[in-house]
Image 1 (tube, rainbow, N blue to C red):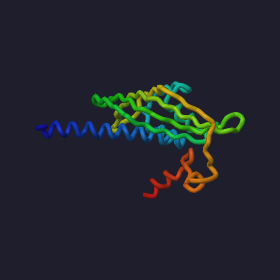
Image 2 (image 1 turned 135 degrees about the horizontal axis):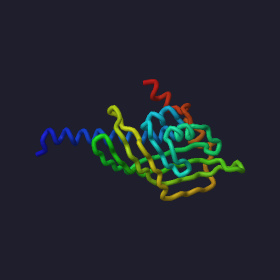
Image 3 (image 1 turned 45 degrees about the horizontal axis):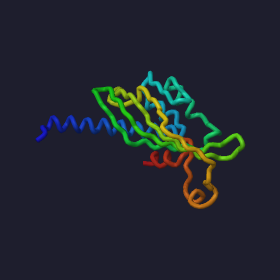
Image 4 (image 1 turned 120 degrees about the vertical axis):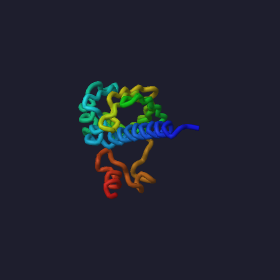
Amino acid sequence: MPTSETLLAELATLLDKQQLHELNVRYCMGVDRRDQALLTSLWSESGSIDFGLFKGSARQFCELIALDNPAVRIAHHFASNELFEIQGDIATGQSYVIGTTVNVLEDGSLQDQLAGGRYLDTYIRDNGRWLFASRLFVIDWLHAQNTLADYQSGIAAAAVNGKSSTEDIAYRFYNKR
């Protein structure tokens, strides 16, 4: 039978892992909504990222990724299959990621892009809060095709449409509570 001390330690580890999971979710939301303030709040002061197209300071990455990008109409990321190893106030983790974008090509046509890969992360706990210290994006596969989506009819025309900005309905939803 586990002791109460063992159970408390296991519970603390589970809470840490939940906080790391939510950090990953907030990162995906911040990138998809181009929310610089949210993204910046997720990184340690000296945080760094290697995203392939960008390698350097997390602060600079947060500024760049939040800029309006006319070549990307919308982005959507999913992080899953997370595995975290925690040692005190330092943790490492791997999470699988699928990212979808609708890209505007030079001729004005739209392209759906689906990329799959992994994030290899180092985290640091600062004042009781987990933050990214470093992040490496590893791409495992990529698929692109001209879009077949029709955003003017069907469910796309009838449902509330997401936005690649902090004007997305989720911000109003969470702020009204």
